[in-house]
Amino acid sequence: MVPNKAGTLTVHAEVDLTDPVDHIGPEIVASLSSLMWTGLVCVLFSASRERSIIERGLLSFHDVTCIRFVRRTNQRDYLSIQSDSGCYSYVGRRGYSQTLSLDRQGCLYHSTVQHELLHALGFNHEQCRSDRDQHIRVLWQNIHTTSQLTEYLTFSNKLLTHNSNSSVSHPLCFPRYAFSGNNRPTMEPIPNANVEFGTASQMSKNDIDRVNRLYKC
Image (cartoon, rainbow, N blue to C red; front, top):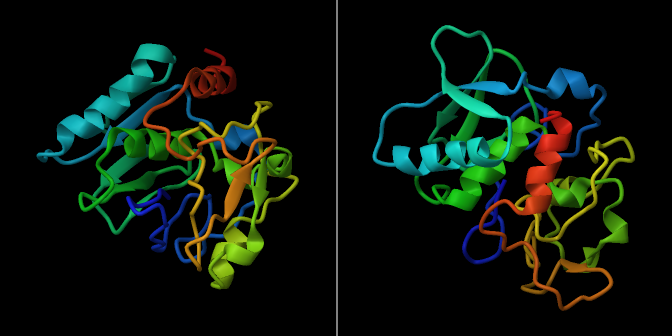
């Protein structure tokens, strides 16, 4: 799930978690190994005018990690990259055909492609980390009253942090006004509330280190 240009979030039946498609609440991850790929990730997507943007996102991992995205032939487990309704991905490997949606009406940006690929590799939103409240203050009074959105920002102590530090500059960090119901901020960083966040245009060194640590590159 990614923000739209207005800084708010358009919520579809998105699957940023290993969860049924009609639910967007946080999920307890029980087994790290079951979510990981081998390091070789097979992908399938049809040729289109947006192909170069998607390929640029895939290749950006090749340059700085040991992850390799390859075209699927007959492999059982693979990412099926489609232009569905919204921008979304399961977190980690699900097995068999696994949809990663990059809607051509708003998702085809380099940072968004990296965002969803990071989900597919096993990384969750920063706001769902169990140590979130040490780094981000959630302003619950400004969040839209839709119960699913409130639930989505609720974390579990069992959500994986991959033994990494939280980062407000991470591509998986929502912007300041995400889920706002009154045009006021819903989150602010700690300790300096004025620090910009949720505007990453690409992976940082910290993001790259997380991928390499998780996959033992």
